[in-house]
Image (cartoon, rainbow, N blue to C red):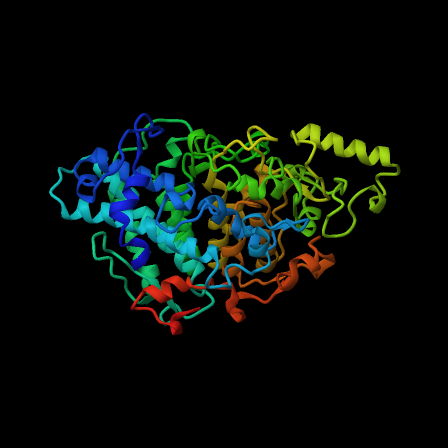
Amino acid sequence: MINKFKYCVLILFAISITSCSEDFLERTPTDAISASDALANEENMQLVLNGIHRGLYSQSQTVFPGGNTARANNHYWVPLGDNLTGDLIHSANANNLSWRSAMQWNEHTQPTSLTVELLWYHRYNIILHANLLINGITNGDFTETPELNSILGQAYTYRAYAYLSLVQHFAKGYLIGDPSSDPGVPLLFSSESPFTSEPRSSVLEVYDQIGQDLESAIAAFEAGAPRSGGGPEAKSQLNIDVTYGLKARWALSKGDWATAVDAAQKAREGYALLGEDDWKSGFNSNNLSEVIWGSHVIQAETTFFRSYFYLASNTFNGSQIRNNPKIADRRLVDAIPETDYRGDVFLPDAPNSNTSAANGNGGWANNTNPLYTSEEEFDAAIAEIKGTYGLVSGHNTHPYMHFKLKQANPGTIDPDDVIYMRASEMYLIEAEAKLMMGDLNGAIEALRPLAEARDSAWSDDFASEDAFFEHLKFQWKLELWGEGFGYTNHIRWDQGIDHAADGGSGASEVLYQDAYQIEKPSVNDDWIFKIPQAEINANPNLSPSDQN
């Protein structure tokens, strides 16, 4: 971290802490703020916090020195989880922002790739600023107020969030390795120069630190002020519910089942499950009742062709989508009961209008769907899809394309919110944790509210724990499809990737290359992200032998 962070207090604050007031949406004329000024009062500490909030979705060159316009942080990192595991399937050969290279496993397996470098430094950038607030508040002589405790709670939560992201990507999975000896990531607590680094701590040590930070955050929030304001911008601020949600994720990933159950139940309190209309509205706003946490992306700081929806939503007016509509695994879609309304956002019979489609079946001349007996019917179906979903003339269609993720203004490049945590995930965590505890009936009851809300004919008749586990995996994949959970789920379940099995996913083997079939994480260390070579070169406490 040395080269990247040695100038952070001088440069980074000048960039990221230029935003505050009203409801944290308007800019101030501030050009720079020093570390001492940042800790002068609660208002300035909130500015530091707002910088972290904005940094979640800003282009990385505006967040830390050495960043790059090709990654807008969580706009990329969130859908990457489903891009890597073949849940979000590419239908054609498009490589804007290295999205195809990431899908082919040619990014996270290369220590010099932009993807591993920027993910590493973005997460440590969060830690740097969280450390500044934590150290400043806990070591300072401040009058304790609810507002100050809320800032402290958010700082501890952010540090836990960043370390959990780092250890889950740059180390072997807790449940499939030996956490007491497996190398994790460096634990850093400094916020002042010189920014000396540390060796890699063990996975267990990193997880223990995350747990301590989560408990400190909860204690601070319990004495803190609630989220300020209302509307989608309010959910950009962290609160105790977000902390409990992260605690549930952390506990599930390490096999602390009882803690996962308790934290998941607490996290979702007050967040009503979505109704059908809202579930189908596109997952583009923090205003949705289920959203516990998300970035509210404002017009003034849109990332244009760097956004989540540019990479994942078939309504975005960008070449990555127009030329390469994203499709879902047909094995998943074909398994959705007719009584489950979530199936309506996938179009198995969409005509393949793309003559450059990877499967070679694009255009009427190559049509293989007996539903269309004439070119007129084929073209009419394409026109209907475009009209229904607001696509422009250049958008291609493809069988099994999705419209789960839709812009509020389809056919544009307008920004939309990036959702990180929903109540549905908490029901799934509780159900899985109870199943792992051997409580099949408890697991079924934990899943019931979500499953019955989505499927009017959902049946709770499961012959065994294994049968229910397979169904629970289906629920995870369907409910949170496109929201980035594929990578961590595969590692926790120790599940490989096989696009050829059970009739095939619909992905092209020619396009997917070596990523078409990948062995499970416990026997394939390619699931672990490479540490950036720049970090190996700059950090005196890391050597080539530390490389994953």
